[in-house]
Image (cartoon, rainbow, N blue to C red; front, side, top):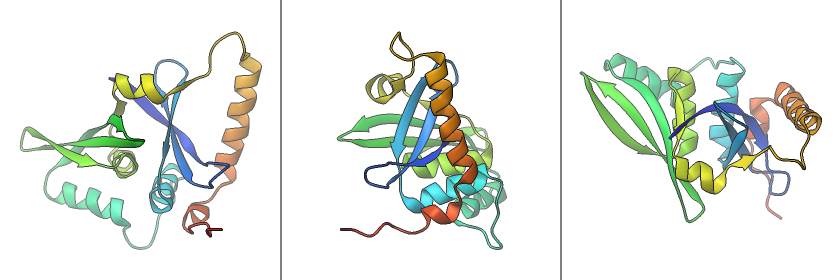
Length: 168
């Protein structure tokens, strides 16, 4: 299992589907996870420190856990089965840990709010991660791609994830 960091949220250029991009804390491996528009908006809002007048679903769950004396201690992307990622949310309550099955997008949205670490199973990273290393890719190319992606993240708004694209 490896600790991951949220690198950002973007759109799949082909299908216009949101993607959350996780990066290994150690190394240059990136794990792209396709997610829904509402979850992308929830993740992006928290990443940009935006707030809403009333609690959104992930804020509500976080508040409920807090009121019950429970806390999200970590989330883990556990497996990739038939092109679907699976995750678990680890909640601590009264000194014991409870594992809750979750979609990765919801787990990530909760982890951001709880400031809990994000992990991914080694098998998932080995099977699905993209590594930006090797002789074919120079540091300048990586920096250029990272710079373009960061510029996109600076300019994108949660509203852009709120509307489903029209089907053709």
